[in-house]
Structure formats: C-alpha cells, structure tokens
Image (tube, rainbow, N blue to C red; front, side, top):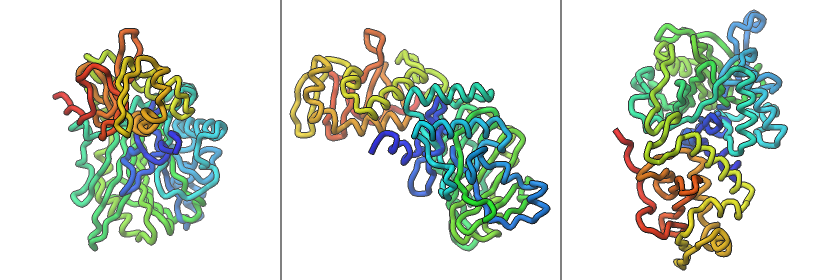
Amino acid sequence: MTNKEFYQETFSQLRSSCDIRWEDMEMRTSKRHISRHLVTLAAVIALMAVLSAAAVAADLFGLRRMLLPQWGQTLSLSGYAESPESRALAQWRTWLTEQGLGAAAEDGGTDPWFQIDQIYTPEMEEALTEIAEKYGLTLHPAAVDAAAFPGVFDETFLGENNRAYHVRICEDGTFFFDGEYDLSGGETLSYQFIRCVRGSFTDGLLEVGDVSRYQEWTYETACGRTVTAALAEDRGVLIADLEDCLVTVNVPRAELERQDLEALADSIDFGRLTPVTAPDLSGRGADTQLNTGSGLETGAIRTFAAELLDLLERDDRAAVAERFSYPCTVTTAEGETFQADTAQELLDRWDKAVAPVTGTLSEALMGGDFFSHDGLVGTADGAVWFGLTGDGQIRIFTLQTPEGAGVRPVSPGISAGPSPAPEA
C-alpha cells in the first residue's frame, strides 16, 4: 500500500498546510479516527428528492446550492456554490484530479462517508496555498485530537442520548467527529458531524449522487433553530446554515425514518454552535512550538514530515538514509545488530534493517500527532524520535518496532516507549 493509499484509508488529520483533508478521513463508526482521519473534509448530502416545484424554483432549502461547482453530484461541506470556500474547494479538487491525486468526485458516486484528502508532497502544499490566497481563505495549521487539549471541545450542544467520538478540532473552531444517538426504541444511529467555520479552507465533501433522489424539508428543532433535513433510501442529512459556520450531519443508514432524523436534530442544540469561539491550542497545539526545549516549531516539524513522506512514497532510499543521525545502532528483525557510521552503511543493510519498519515511520508521520520530550520530537507512542542536530538539520534518531528492530542512537537514553503526558 502506498503512502497516498494509506492516507486515503485513514482519516487522520487535516494535514495540508491545513491538516484537514476530509476526503480521506472517511469517518466511519468502527473505523476511522476521525483521523483517522482533518483535518481537509469531503462530505455533504444527496437527498431523495421529492422537492415541491415551488421549493425547487425558490431554492428554499439551499441543497442544490451546496453542489460543488463543476463537480456534478458532490456537495461541499464548507459553503454554498457561490461562496469562496466552495469555489476554492472546486479548484483544489480539479487540480488534484489533473495531477492524478484526487478521488473521482465528478463521477457522481454515492460514497456514504465524509471524504477528506491529505497533503503529502510539497507540490500539493504549494498548490493549496496559492488557491487559498486567491480566495482570501486561511489554511488550518492542523486538525488535532481534542482529547489532547482538555476543555477545547464543549459537548454541551449534544443531548444526553448523544455522544461524540474521535473529535478533531482546528485552530478556528472547525471540528468534526463520529457520533452516536440512542433512539427511543432502543436502536442507535451512527452519524458524522462537521462544523466548518467560514473564512478558512476545509477540504470536506460528500458524494451524494442525483439530488433528485432526496425528499427535503425544513424543520424547526427543539432549540428553536431551523435546519434543512433530507432523506434518501440510503441516508439522511441535516444542514444548519448558521451565522459564521455551516454544520452538516450525515447519517449513512438505509431505511431511515423521517421521525428518527428529526429526533436526532432535536438532540442537537445548534444555537450553541454559534458564534464560534476559537479554541486554545497552545502548548502541544497546532500553531505554537511543540516544546521550547526542542527548538522546533510545528511548521518545521510538519514540513519535515511531508518531505520525508514524499521520499518514502518514491522509495528514494538514499535520500531517506541521509535523514538519519549517525552513528547509529541497527537491529534486524532476526536480532542481528551492527553499527552504521554513514548513510551508505545503512543502505547496505537496508532490506534487513530498515525496510521492515518504514511502514511504522510512514504511519507515524501521517498521523501528525507529535509530542516533545527531552529536546526531541516523538510520535507513534515513542517508536519514532527526531530533532535538531549540530548542523542545524532535523534528523531521525530512533525508529523501531515494539520488538526492538530498527535504528537507534549509539548513545543510550532514547528508546521506544509511551509518550509523555501533556504538561500542565
């Protein structure tokens, strides 16, 4: 499996300059972190249409306005077709397709899940940055796990029978999660939820097929907010157009009843979702240094990760070997140990010593959840450690499996282990 395919199967964060790429973030109940994963968000809804002629003519519900410009039956989760958010997303998706990197949203499929793409090359990041600047939008530095930042995600907008899992949140208050809601009859609805804050680029969309399949109506919820509800044979959708954000709830379920979708809407206090308050993601967050002792800012760390992922994708072993710190101790899966003083010495034993653990390295870098300890940056629960060396370059110190195979410094003191708890 290539790094690109791994991204698309994991739904990690929004790693673009915006660590949110929802096209690959398939949020599924049992899989996806949300993360797995951004971070940047492909979801919206196709609806079984039994729109009245008057409603269609007046465009009262706005669903057709959410169709991604020039992309047929795909909805933009971040804004209506005429908005800068949606136009930027359409241009970004077109660029991905031209480069052979994007999902074929224009095919008009009916993917039941939100989609979030991932940025994994410098070229992708450069292209996205230019598009965002063109439309006056900001990019999310990252989509982080809300569990690492106690207090930044306020769940009080969810009723007592409603729960959020795998919450990912961005610096401006954009967030998404997998949810579950208990119906009165004992059944549980699994759904996906995303709030996109206006003014930023969020790569989120949903392939819905022919919108004429959907029955649409407006519904006043228990909190007094009016939402658009849409129902097809394979899903239900709720859309709340709020003052400074757009909220989409996707329920990929066959034979969903109208009253069940409305009950889910009643369990959400949409009024608490606006005005948006930007969360404090300082400390281990997305827009500050991970640790003053590491000497590395988050931007430098993510640039290093993106470049390294690109090299792994292209299997450029020589360039990857140059990213390690020497001398190092190398242990093969068979238990053979030797010292490598140069990149060439590591390359000579690459197949036995390094190739078996490059998957661990790729997965760790794509996860994007970094922490710092004792002057180094770690990820993958301590299986990977890297940091600044005397020549001012970022290099890998440790890469190893739980069984001990991999590369470690000759000097003791750095080894795999649990990540340190966040500092108070």
